[in-house]
Image 1 (cartoon, rainbow, N blue to C red):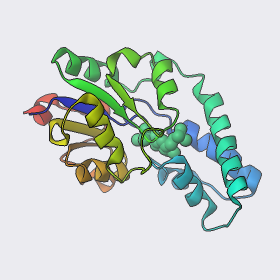
Image 2: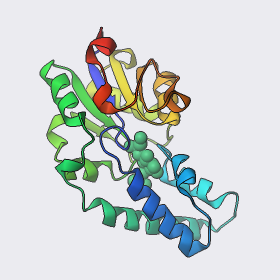
Image 3: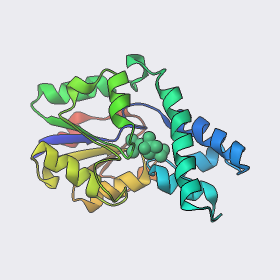
Length: 211
Ligand code: B16
Ligand code: MG
């Protein structure tokens, strides 16, 4: 029986991908690295460190330079994020979470982002999630199931009692590896391995997923 829903943040609850793109692009320009919108698509749901590794395309840098670049990118990202407000929740997201809670379902965020807490605060959604599992919560990033398993345990639920909503291939893989029901948001080429696939968060059919 489903007792909890765990939501990815970027691409499911809000769309911060454009901010990540602008921040990585600024860093890439400063470092003389090529970075396109297509490259940015590969970073969906990918942790900050893994994203930088992809951006560097095999170029070797010192640990210190690597850390400095991550900090710099995050500074650009945080500047952009601070302009967010409640209106930046994706259509249907707030309503869906509220509807689940009215049915006694527990709700969590399961995001790779270390900025997830601040984004949820800016969206004014902190009251509608029981817990936030983010980039600080576990060592192994998606596609490892660790983040979602952590979120489930924070909710006091077993994995098979949880639904995970994800827009990234790595996130769907993480949910499946954790033994959870996966709802994919986006094209089948990206999230087709999920149990249920919808184009957008607003399209999720609760009756279909909950039975
Ligand atoms: P940060 P999600 C992910 O969020 C983003 O999709 C991904 O592009 C980003 O690199 C990652 O968070 C880490 O974010 O740099 O803020 O820690 O989709 O898992 O909610
Ligand atoms: Mg995502």
